[in-house]
Image (cartoon, rainbow, N blue to C red; front, side, top):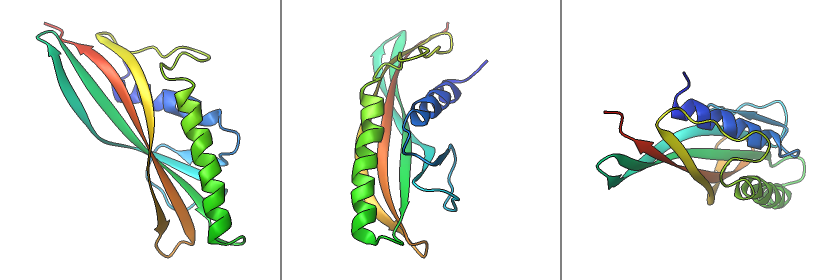
Length: 148
């Protein structure tokens, strides 16, 4: 049986596959790519909020890092390309907030997917790689019922 993380990871892959501009993506850390723009997805610390004695709301968070080469067009072109790609990635998740487009998400027993919220998280340059990177945090909210 799939875990909540596995279920969410699989659905994130589906949504990223819908963004035609992404040349390749990986569900693990990586900084060497064959094609650009490239995206990596890794889990990051989440949060838990107590709802009732039988239910918690958990935030499963993922960091999407979008990479674009500085050469041949220069930093300005790379940043402009990442502005556009960042919007397209955030739009993909914003337009499918409850993961129901296409095949609806099927969560493990005792969990209910509430929503995903994409938030732009920052910019950076990858040291010694001639890459510009943009980060988008995905906050996936899940209701978890205790199984006593």
